[in-house]
Length: 476
Image (cartoon, rainbow, N blue to C red):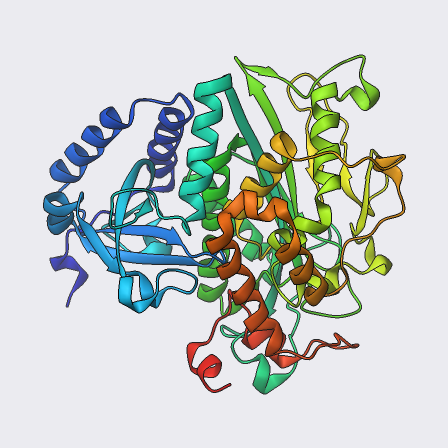
């Protein structure tokens, strides 16, 4: 069909940025949900050029799923959208498969038509159980409920920003074909901060940055990372649920752009042995009434007593929660002390081998940085675990807790064992969801070599929760 016959929404990047920043401001200002819903429904009704709405949600492991609903159908049925939960890993059993999607109208995005298709808009969904309550394996909903509860009870706003590293590899399906090729091919070997204008890596980074900007990310800086063909594209702080949504969008954007250029954007923590792996350094703070509660000009490293108590709880439960922050077999290659691995259960302002770092900050920017997080972790589970542990966890009676000689697990089997036996993870997730999550990780681990060895094994990639080739998985 000739494009001349179509009349689907396709906005300039400037128009997209304006719309997305306005929606972001509404979310930041906590405009009542009913007000936002009515505004969005009116917009969808009036904007005739929209043909479909893409609803996004994440499974228990953090893999992003998308459903397209015809706009006219959605306008009539937005409060009764059902789907089969038994087809989603970590969700319901077949006998109780019906789940609902409820629109989180504040989490509404306009995407560039050249990467997401003409005539579509995106909105994040909340998974609802048959009885109308938030579904217990939808960690986004759990995180949102936790954050809203703290804001209502204590006036706290949970803030986060994530530095997400990844690799750009040659070929559109480099991960899915790894079991055939046995290797990843770099597109650039320049290294830290070095990429010539117009080369493949720089073109990729520039394009991703443009898309992010158009979607209201409020970029800060972007650059090649230490390892060959590695990248990092940073953007501003956000309220915790919005920050987790942006992680999912960031990875989606990177994959879309890479695919359009004939490449693969990979968020495996350690896809190549012998070079630095990829992390997702997670910067967090808590504010109240616009005041950063982690800032104290007289505190040690300028961090408040509340901030240090937060750090102590994170360190206390570091082994308990390691599986939530390092969710794949491959992630434990990254916790290797030869490459500045943040595998030490300590806190430091300067030691990048520490699990927790206290960056230089001021009244606005003071924060705690959890460095051990892998980029393939479920972002909602990561931020829920970090914040709830830091606020409600226990503090171990260990002498010199912040500098004790303790280490995170160096393999997924130990991490699974620690996760299963910890009382704290039961408090976080409940017995049912905790067991489901651990079982999913165990299933992946059992399909891989027990010893990591000196090269990345094909099963680490082909049975990875984000790569997830259903055909190969079922051949096991």
